[in-house]
Image (cartoon, rainbow, N blue to C red; front, side, top):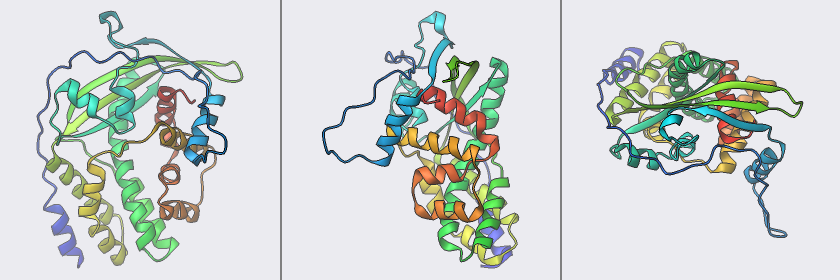
Length: 309
């Protein structure tokens, strides 16, 4: 596929549509505030345990004291953690779609932020939302590139291009938001108070497809190697289908990914190690490999919601 044809094919899918959405929610089922004090699960003697299960147990045992001081619509009787919130963060939007009367084919995504002031957290959440979409697409592109491309150098070029490529959220609708004022006391006795802000966006499937096409077009514009360009262009249908809807994560998987991302922030890895992580197909390793310093507050907000800071 020559460069001109490649750009024509991807650019043809780029036009953005406006999407319409939902009405106000019904009352959500009661949910308890996130807590880090629950005891680890008991296991039968000699029962095999997965790495993610072990990571989840260790996270609970070493978690900081975590308390929700205030939250959105508290005076109106809203729960400190609505029934839809944590499932949605883990990729399960069934409760949200029922409460907000959203069509099943709508593509829903969540933006997350953390900041000392509520107004700052609200603004950052929308910026972080676009960054989260770009990160999700980057993981899909780079995972396939790590397997398909023949050298670490080619992989590094694509990884760098994908990391620098941004996403526009035009054509998506801001459906709902929620915030919590969270107090964390770490193992050293230090207290940190911050606002965690969560925002839900929706779009039609064809709008998502155009977003994916535009992202891939922009990535190819930052890559000079012709084989890498062709490899990225051939990914469109697969990545579009793969990223359209979230894969639901278990509590153990969610905890393991956050722990791995926290570790990656402390000790960034080389491109060769990143490539090995993407080639492994392990979601925990891939999540850690995709982390950059810009993800610090985002990961902190996820950890606070899950009670595993």
